[in-house]
Image (cartoon, rainbow, N blue to C red; front, side):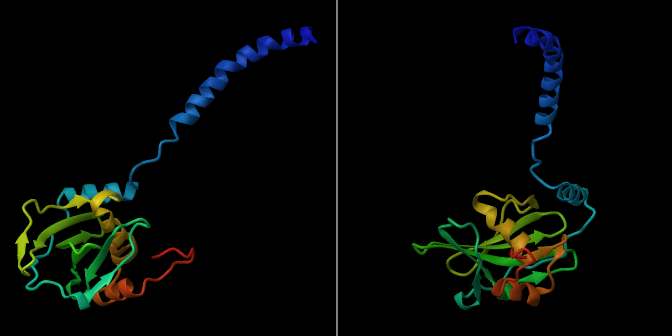
Length: 192
């Protein structure tokens, strides 16, 4: 029994470096990219100035509670996220603008006028609402990549489930509001 092991040992030692090389090769390709390549290309095109944003005006009034439609975000979210249905705008440049209202259970309320550019997976804060109903233009109002985590994770959910599809707005303002009120499911029973 011992002799057969001794005869096989040279073959096993020859295979060990090959096994190590195969393991290193397999492990080097397991990193998952943080964003889709198409999203990266779209962001780069937007950065080059291949699209020009349409003119916009700040909202004239604050949103009314009767016009707000809440939408689900993360399962453990402690805040209520809503969109003012009367503020939804879809422009020819592929931007969907809306007023977002974020409410806490204690009564705190953040109101912002924002836009999402569907083809570049970017968002922009235009203004924030004051308690007296007036608006203040944002200081650093520029297009930024949507982050699917943190305080702006809701923008990723809006992009994916309610506002955009195939790098274009889901439809006109009426269709987007309808989708916010009555979300539809795709074939896999996931929200579209």
